[in-house]
Length: 345
Image (cartoon, rainbow, N blue to C red; front, side):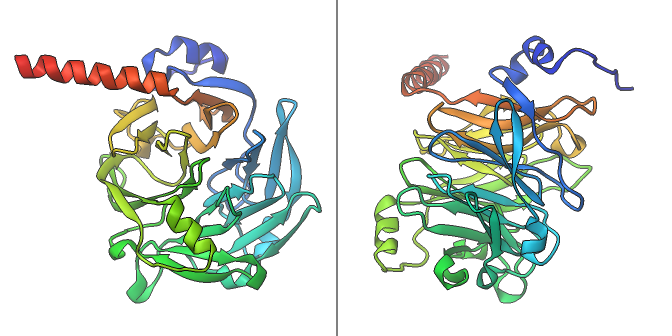
């Protein structure tokens, strides 16, 4: 039997102990998903602005609330929009929405408040992740649930000047079982989690992913016109998380994957930890509460997410500070000391 909690979210977060340590409400709530959508997504630009997409509208956070920038994404896509990916160019001029199962990619001009569907980038029922190169502004998408012989998550380069024409960059050995989010670090390294297996409700919420990165030199050559397929470098294998729908990458190259129960961090060496939340919870049971959406705010060196209590409250816009390099060094020293003590036993 569930108890109804009447404390405010900020008070509960302060009192809830280590499982939510570091989660800080920053004012305002996420717009709820639009009709026909299952999630609201978040994105940031290099100036520290925060954006949200509910499936049919794009919002910008200002003065403690999200104000509408554009509405009608579903109409621009030519179908209903269940957003799977959201990215904004570093200058905050353009936004891209991958519409998930409807398979469209929509480009939104934030100044003109107009949108267009990049028809050539349509992937049937499988447009999933989207990210923008912070150096050159090039757009990348991943597929999901692609039919036929190419049934795998694949990474593509998008050419908006050619109505979204796609260039295949990697299919990761066709080992993926679903699509996942993708993200750039502020320095311009692309990180792609590739789901390889997952459980189904009502069993355990274990979800396995491999993580690939694409180097800055490869991306520079790609921008210059040299396309080398299959260049992703796998640096983590079979990492256990509870989901991989959205990923964010900080200045240290650590990738963060969000699920309802926790935010998982995978550092550049492939080591995994829990950045916030409680991985002992079962994400399958957390419908409508816990964590949702994720983006990295470079100026604030923090993760931006939504968090809701299991009481039907709205998702509060929240921040989780990313570790500074000195903090990471102390963590590494602590881990080394612990390992040394274990070896002496």
